[in-house]
Length: 390
Image 1 (cartoon, one colour):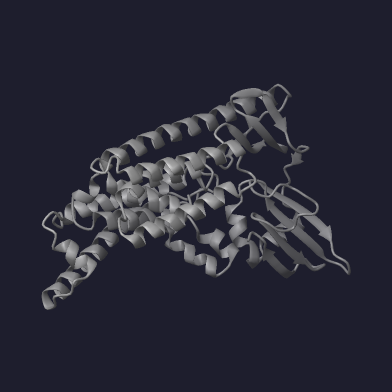
Image 2: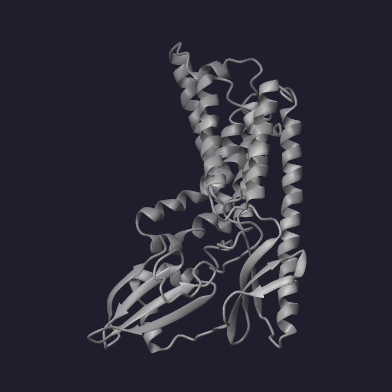
């Protein structure tokens, strides 16, 4: 999921009364919910290198055991340094005022470690639900796992996870201004995106207005933990609904294609932004890919969106292109690979590599997420290559 979703999920965890278990619990929830994404720094190297390392080592089983101990140790060190500073001065920092609050919970290392585990493990739990994939067994096994349940940016999750946090936090003018800016940006993103239907845009605006009204009226101010638990309960039902929809889509697609004499090996139902019952995706037989679209509550809506695409085994030209250092990340990450080879003027070859999850075949499209281009000379030596997934 996106960083905002992870952050709001961690913050809502804190509001379920976890923050009352020990000092620094809120920090553990928010940092822990995001910490596996330290591999995002790979994006500053290149988009292809990002595909090579993202959702790998830092999201794998070994890291998920180590991260909570590192996070707890870092927070304990932070607490030690600030207590020493407090003893040496009469600084009236926000932290010292909070530590001086008699209602502030004491620091309990055991509780802090347990909360860190919950927060850190929430990250791969959420990442598994989308079609991007996650390598949960790294570094022992690089197998990708896919939940095919949520779009990678899910506005309904944003709403549910933001509700309790907005009602509970930031009563200062600066905090309120921060929420206004964030809410305005999120609303502009949702309402300004063409793929989000009008009904979903209206529902989003009504929900945001309701949260703001409840905050202004002061409702539930003393029962925020109940609100947070309620939001998690609704989110759990939402996940079950979306998961069931994706599984039902797989069943529908298998049956629809079987009726046409096609035996399917794998189906990927791709959730669409803010749409609960619509799926687009890829079905794979021994010989072809089928790009489909279906409303899973209406089986008669099933349609094949493109002519069947042959599953191509890499020939010598494609194999040479796949060895290019510019596409090692895409090569490792691809789920439904498709290759197009074109002759270059003056000799040589241009190989266009696509992952059909995000880059349907199009003779005019040579850029976009999930696309790379490699140029080879007549001896199949690499001339140039570029991952055009930006």
